[in-house]
Length: 77
Image (cartoon, rainbow, N blue to C red; front, side, top):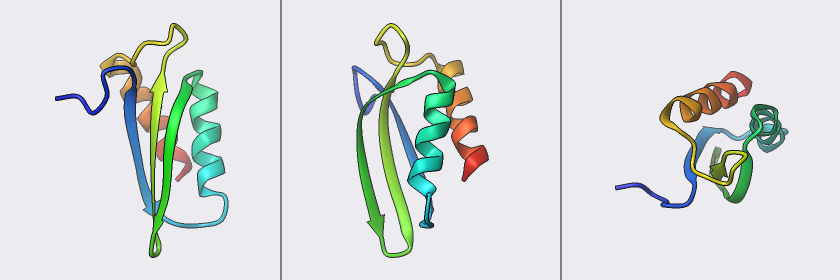
């Protein structure tokens, strides 16, 4: 089952560092997706950021688009 019927869920887990959230958000913006909501957490030394994103029409991303967005975020971590 999908985690969200109205958005694509992208979970970012990385060692927490200054600017991590900014880099992830900038990468999302560069892909053209819109962030509907986000849950930002730090658990010890690990950042766990969950973004709910949609495409320009307000729909969840296609599988191919989701892979491209995930790759763009991974490149900046």
